[in-house]
Image (tube, rainbow, N blue to C red; front, side, top):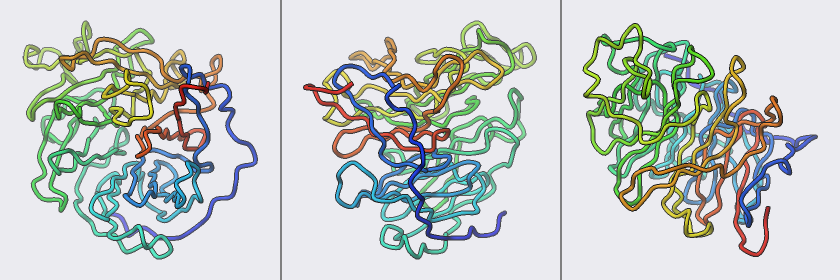
Length: 368
């Protein structure tokens, strides 16, 4: 358990140097601009009904509030409302309350929208999630069933943990913390969850094994239409990558294969179905994925946003690059993390390396 986080209000000064967004390439008609700067370590985003954007962080230990009172598409301010938390990467908003996921627990801040100057003391919704050296930070989402979905990553790169079924899973619970259960197993690490607006099925990204090489295994996009499915980890790491240590310990015929393979080490994080009306019709109810980018030991890969196309049967049939340019040569000046479709149909993108929130818009008569 941790001591209750300190709470403060701090306006963030305007950056001396903005990121070079002119290097980002988008399809014709699309434009990108800075929505908010100096959002240090920006990870998951959540929007309240009054238009306040909440942003979690990892190493920074902070949660930000970013209001846009006049709804002009540019943040009015960036306010540190909570500090001193342990990797509060995950934020979600429901019924006037902000939910914040730390490593070991989930907190709830009630009636927060009207109290940014005096944030209420948190309610501990649930605690007892494992503290591990890897994959302990969480992105959380409320599903259409009203339950809060909470991924719990593997404690190390590859390990079998039958003694603790929380590991390598997607869990879910009631908003008050009761009824915690495992929804999906065999998920090494996911930080991107969303539900198909057509079928209601859960889709999620998965980051693959780090310790092999540049050619594999693949990262993945998965679909879980029902509870109780197993997605392979640590026994199999996608097609052709049966684990040499654990592969013989599980009936691989019970594994649910990925809906779509992604290149190795692109680190897919945020996943969103585009449900707005601003973008062209071909984007409607299709998937956008933020690829955070590879670790330093690999050839640079990712650092972009991809569009995953689904057919009429809601099966993934391909992917194309939607936005790129954060990677220049072998150096990346930015790392996309999370995606959020705004009420006007624009798309927000968080970047924990550049410390900004971008806003992508479409105008058929202009744009990048």
